[in-house]
Length: 402
Ligand SMILES: Cc1ncc(COP(=O)(O)O)c(C=O)c1O
Image 1 (cartoon, rainbow, N blue to C red):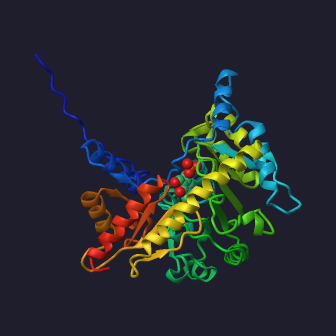
Image 2 (image 1 turned 90 degrees about the vertical axis):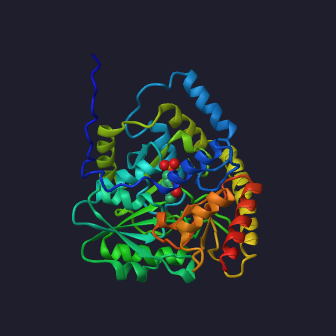
């Protein structure tokens, strides 16, 4: 006799029921499915450098394995790494209260650091201002912390950046913090020092927490991108989030960190000790080498940023072929953000679907970043793919009368 089992229905808890799959991951999955059918899809969806991790860093990882760095470490990370991060960051901080290792918490990527910071700082009844468009996960992280994400749409005449005045207008007595990201994903816009200063002054006046995601800071093409640490006069309401993923081409190693006041760092450390514990020991040693071997790192970063810059220039040139195409001039990161909405073609979601299904180019619809008329194209891919991708985007846009 055979027994039949009926699967019992699963209802997700209220903690996660509202979450949607990340749109960038969904696009990559669809592109992979089409590739599996034999289609030659150009994937410009992912925000991941297409370079190998530099050799000197890979070697440090291998050495770490061979020398037994395969055990648990302190939750907050190995001391030499936290000290190296503090020392590197102090170069940008002019205050007397030098950053110390106890103010650095190393995690499994800046994504985890961002979440831990939101979870430690925000809660029920709080509102958090998010300049929009911005990275899709900020909204979910704030919501997972039971706070309310408040989207502040940026100025289309100024790279879709939010000004202090915009943030002020969107604030209420419940506003507890803001999320900054410069260079910005998805637009590639870089906030000027004046723009950042004004925002920091407003935040200080209102006693808001400033969470500054600086993961793309080193990928800046027209001069250095400012860190909030270059401009702030105090850091008792500042959390800087950074990591090795983008600038060092180390996405898969999963190392990120926060620089935050001691009490905040202690709270994040305690939380992490009950969730993931330490980031992978081997990866921490590789990240340490990336930070302390300054000459090799600068050489590698300079080379990669030069490649991104050459692609940025080529992408802008190709996009300008369609005079009506409105896009943010990308000054950093590795994204082109364009408004592709037309009467005939529909919004960014319809456009991205048509570009993938009919023209084999995967990009991310702007709905993922709360600006549905736009699309994001990543140029962290081989140049010839990038150029073909933008050319097809332009052709499709023009075929809709754009
Ligand atoms: C703005 C932004 N912040 C954080 C991250 C996450 O980086 P990590 O790999 O360090 O978790 C990304 C990755 O795409 C990003 O675009």
